[in-house]
Image 1: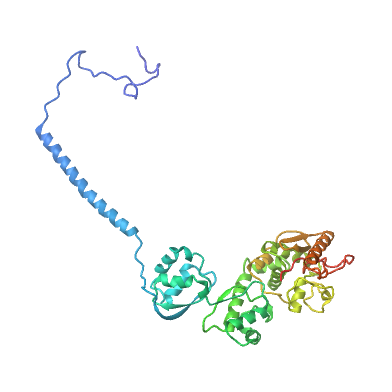
Image 2: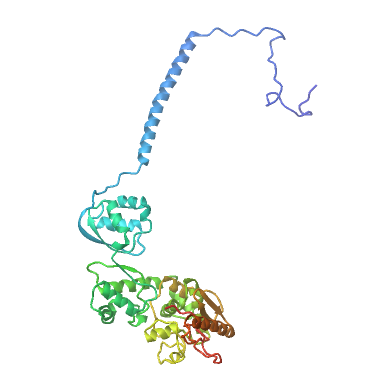
Length: 420
């Protein structure tokens, strides 16, 4: 006797259970013969099959039509485009940092291309166009094909722009504006002086544009004036110096925003490369915090209107508010027009305790908080200078403290690195 409650196992009907014989048929008895097929049922089955096939055909056709429509919708729509090189003449300015969409919109507004879509597709389909459209003002034609317009825009020779390098001083920028606009010498400088109120300078700059003529490439059209370019530069500088809550950052660094601009200008003049800018900024802030004179040769260069690595002992006694060997604190104004990397270094200096630096040779700037180590570094700098130019005297490299301009026994400044 098999008791399921006491002998657990497979129950009848469970997967793997033994097949149960049907009751009511003795062992060995023949199986009953199936009934003869019903002709009505056979006809009904055929009808059902035909109906199913018809439904499949109908719904299959609908599905194919829908798929075809969907595929058609996925194909990009044709973009309106002109044919040929166009006619007439029109000037279109491309500002620095403009993307394809912005450029395409300007082209459409000026009637150069038929649609933004046609131009962006042409540009994205051209390997030569990638990153090749430079800031500037381009002379194009109206009703040009997108590809014809693109061919002009990717050629830098067609960009009529004014490029201001990082670290240029005001007088260099004024001269470049005069040359670009074919103006008499001194025109841009006179405009900056006589129309200062129109430049958009912050009040704390006290009308001095130095430091706020941001280095970049600016578009120049037939109607561009010196005042137009100066205003654009000041506007760009204002945007750069308003990054990262500059007021709060300045307070944390013991400065005001104008102080940050001045620090950035000195960083631009002193750092041998962009990687060292944050460290140079930190040296400046550390020395200011300790009340130490900055002793930067770049400020003397500014006072003398020159760019050099050589600073004599006599020059460190120059009677000028820009002589940071004699006067503690920051110079009265920025000494150049710094670029973005120098600005970011002034806003976010590299952490460190350094008080001195000197570029012993190109690519080798050494930072230290030890006066003795700085003196050894300066001696190496002077030895390298003497080897390169046997007639050169042992003079300063141009920067922060412990100076190469001083004699070995004089506990005076030791400059760091200045770039021309």
